[in-house]
Length: 619
Image (cartoon, rainbow, N blue to C red):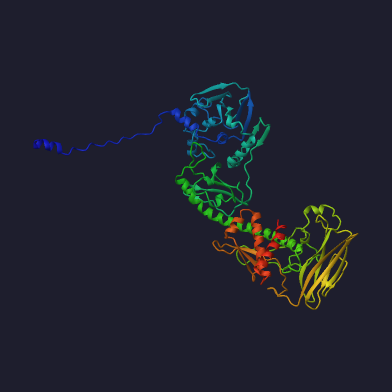
């Protein structure tokens, strides 16, 4: 190869000039695009709501939704008294513009010009009829009073407009869809009423429109009333401000329920549950404590379904603006939870106290005299029962629980009788007991003893019973040995006193005994008065990973329960199992406290015995 040829082959060629091609996106098949848009709405109820919103945008004050059947064809009509379809230069409804300007709604231009109270903007609302039925007819009057009607069919790209005969040209517009699709025919008027009351809640309230539903198939009529929320309206929250505008809040706080939830709205129209969107799937929004509406007029909706939000800058502003609201709501929910836990714990303690009371009435009094649980209720008359036992001390930390008196409940000593017993006549005398069966009295002091007479069914026997009290062993005296309630005067020397009662009704004779421990001195309580042992209170301490389940703090007269223990977590799956678990911890701590020095076998026997009688009365 010659040198010149070699140079020609190896001389770098100039790079070809790159040419950029630019253009605009275009729809290749317009009918295919229209079909996709028409079938993008997956909720038929949402389609009905859009038709009603079109009527509200047209200034309607009365809207009627009719569901019925004609010539075996189910149909749905929406009739309003608004302005109807906008008219052309000739004064006729401009159906041609409606049919040929899909995705180019005139409402968008009206809103740009400052029109208020208009919701639509996509120009695809009428196409939603594809999710409801086969044939749509939209009628609206012209300026000369004649009624013009546009007709479209599902799956057909054509439309027709004709002048329809009418005796009277009613104002507004009438939309008629028939026959309804098979999957839509089960939508009753009641379901429509429920859906529209929630979906268009604020739009109905703000516009003052009356929406009535006539279900001619079910022969029922409904007036759509905007949904009302339960609970307390939270006034402590200010509407957050963002760079796109104000977020309007209407939130309510109430006891937890899985049905409670916050709705995201735009200009009064519900978009969806707030928990369906990123950033709102936990915290107060999914707690079940909060109900209400968050209205963000600036968010951009997905045009097809209008149940989604585009995750753009406007949505990010919504999320950032709601962060301060989240913190405030979590604090309010925390207050409600603590109050509910206190109420639950009070109910739990009262249930445990009643169960212990009944258990100690059945167990040997001389073996279980370690604390007094036979107390009078707050509403009992003076002198009709023993003095109240020492109230559990206040809880200094954690969740406080006090063993309050049973205000408004039957007398404590009558708890064994069922509520129905007060409405029935008692039978003949079957048994008698002394309340309290075991007690501690200081020398020279006194206390009341009461006779409890029951029939075979446990009902209290009051008529025809003759009482005879006397001191069987030890010293002391009784003020009235033939009364139902007597006063025992303790002797001046300490010791054990056995009091015997004989109750007679006709030929039936029943006996009972009570043990009174007369002591020289009682340990003074912290308030300086004589100490009377009562059922202690309890509180929680969250110590996950620790092995201890509970402990008895004597100085605070309090049982501390480890709420972080796996057994407590497992038992808290239901209130009944949690109640049993806490009651068993009470049994354990009280037996350990009141039987010091006993062997492990004896302690277990005491625990099993007390638990058996206590749990049979736990409710």
